[in-house]
Image 1 (tube, rainbow, N blue to C red):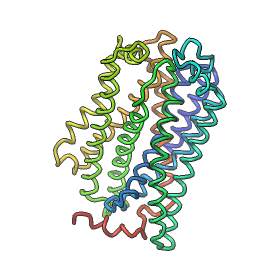
Image 2: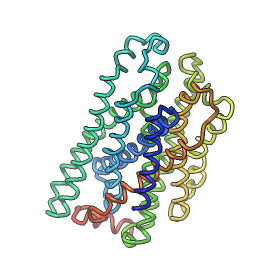
Image 3: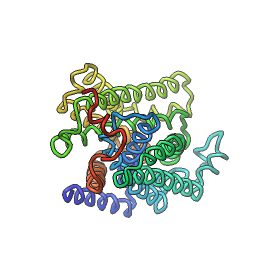
Image 4: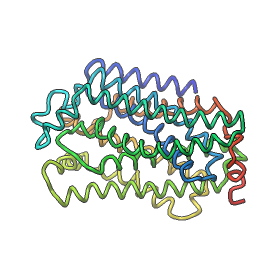
Length: 379
């Protein structure tokens, strides 16, 4: 934890210094790292919410892992809001939308006004933090009083939370990422954000499960749990590719200038190999590696695939955020101090936040009514 905390602080200080100096690549790195940390927390929230809403019991023994991930929501959310509050200049809409709005310039001017956008962002983060803390609070109080009513309350919170999450993550993706190119729009972009968020969240859960299986959860996390996590990762990497292709194919087929510009920038010159690598890391490699049953039950293979997906998630965010900023300065795909700092800040901050949260409660929800079923899962 000390090593992860020190690395996270170093990465954050480096990026903050660059942002304060007006460096747009440092600004992009800060947005990438903070949004990445935030989505790790949201992935933990939506995983837990889906399990409660579905009445799933197989995952009860693993639930403290995504619960710990939820601790990243306030930190990642605050970092994104700080960037928008203190330095929104790299967003083109901060200078007016006359040259960027197109036919929807009037609506975009109103929607992307700085006070309104910042207010919406605060609402998103407050709602996410409130829901996450309520669910985690009921889960931990159940450890103390053994009251099954906490499970019922969390089920109700989760059903409402899934609906709220679907709306807010879509709007946050539009506000914070898509508005970097305000002349471009995609109605599927919100679903695309969910697909990348959830597949990378599953990868984080897998890494944590395999790591803790070597120690305190040795008799808790079974091959059956890993198998199901592997199946989910396989499915949602494929879902990510389906949404990616749906967005790309429709834009390519319609060939409208206000839509195609997004992909034209990302398929020119040295951007094109990264564009292809994105598909390989987020879908092709996980799909081929996890297609058969046996790799899903082998921790050493499963964790390697999860790491590939996490690298792919960073690249996916890089391709969403960096090209419009690099294009303004005429740069080829940049990778240097600021991009390395974003990798260090994202990975180290996530590790430090999750590890710190894991030690604040028992590693399994000891009095959950479904724990016995989860421990004896498929035995």
